Image (cartoon, rainbow, N blue to C red; front, side):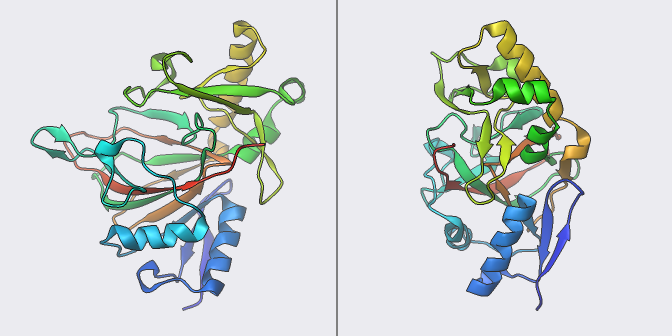
Length: 277
């Protein structure tokens, strides 16, 4: 079958049709897939039948070295597999899923080598809600006022996270001393495309290095507002069998709320990235 690439929105994301991951992906098919990934930042393959972790892991490894899961209680049988959801066994959560809306964020931005990409496979989906919203980091950087772009040139922002916390918004952010933290360039250059993207996020970016708290928060708020502009985004409505991969180096994502009485269960594999520049 001929591969077809269909954009999901004017800003970001594309669906790739004509690929069955369970049957293996040829080198020619993969060249088309990774080219689309670099162009559209988020790629979607619908109606995939991947009952085993190994099938997803094998495909994810084509994109690079896999990152091991840090929260072992949510780890699958493979060290790079993590489950995201609200299934419970004897009252204990079997998947990582804070309740409520989750603001825009960048996976593992608080690590020395944040994720290159995150791959989610949908196993169970609620009847409504739980959508993932993706924002284009390139467009966000380019849309900043010129005065803000000039001010942040060469600056770094510190990102912080606490694996024990359940925060889904900025007001629950832990201090740099309390959490795991790392500073990275605010304007990050993508190693494959050479384009700059905005590498800050409302959920985990604590402050800008070298600036007083007022100026830091003022600049960050301008960036957060730019990122949240609807015309920079794509809202993904999940279906069972969706396999979705986003480029964590130039995108942000947020999750909408859903009825916690309904089941939402996804399998995640993360691809290890490089030190941001």
